[in-house]
Length: 518
Image (tube, rainbow, N blue to C red; front, top):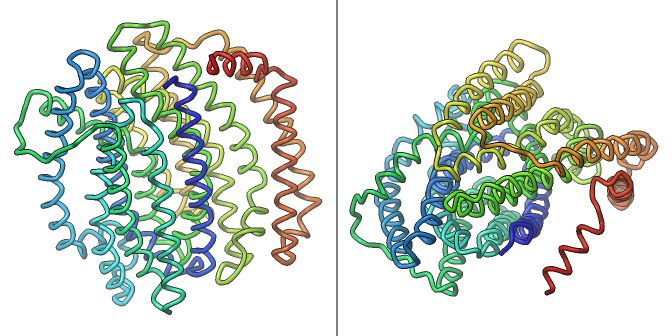
């Protein structure tokens, strides 16, 4: 599968998943609101999701996929599949006792994660209960990550990209059941999370079987390949999870702020993650196995081409998203989230956080491309060192801005954005010094044009949002069409501007389609 087609496949399925996630967040906001009940569930589900991003989809994926791809090219399918079997066996052997230990130690774990609840026994008890329900999700989603990595290395990107759709279906179903049965909504969501992990694991197992991959549990042997995998996973665990670590820091600091602060940040970050997921994850997922093969073959021109196209695709979608979400965030929350226990005050506070998160979108998307270059060269240490520096900076900034200035929860979002740009700057500087980052003429020519088109779109959205503002606080039948008008206008203006300024060349796109049909 070509890089462009793989990116489109992953991006399209991720978009479906993110839209489903957006619907899930709307329903969650209506049922849970932005108070203590929502805060507790958000903290409880963040723990297994943090470890998932840090180890399973982070350290493991960025270390395993290049090694599996190299084995496929150098030794063939048989040895590569044996390596995957051993990796699966060690993963299960390690995660089973870790899951048991964390569940037993959950009160102390939650003290470290959200110490602001320590003096609220009733809320802290529920937090520990939900943490024990959600943590087994880590085991299921870790196995899913390995299955996805194998399929991606074989050029089959669709099953792994489709798995989060099942996650959203399970979570929405769980929310519906809790409302129908009059149960505690955060308790139902916790069970929905763990069940969704099982469903995704089964879906990927079926997909692997259809692809002729039979992953088996064997007695683990510490082979040289596994030793190298573990050595690379340690720094990869840090370097691949900057976003999640920043969220954990933000959650802890937000637990010391007034009630609702965690929820404001959560709902803001969920919308912020929509373009990050569709663009960043799609590009990073498709780029890593592609670059790994070219690095293994020493094909420098192909590496430069795919890196430049990855950044170009990212800017084409990330820049307008950053301007739109940063400049006119409030209409989204007024039009869609306002309802039930989520009022206009909650919409305003959440929009403030999103406005500050949004400028970091291009940096986070570009970081997916730049870190893929390191990982394709099987260098996980350099991104780790850079990640440590940015994490320390984020911790200090988030604490100071949130607790010692009037910014409160908005200060946490601002710290995340500042450190995102610091991270991308350090990654690019280190790559340039090694000669691993060479951007082609097409990217250098089109990037300023994409920026100009985004500015044209912003100039249209700001006055239009002001004109439509009274409609965003009307009935839902008026609010949603008003938002649709705003979004459609932004898309049309940006599309026309980026074509007119030749940020996108239609003839190039048509030529690719003709080549694909042949």
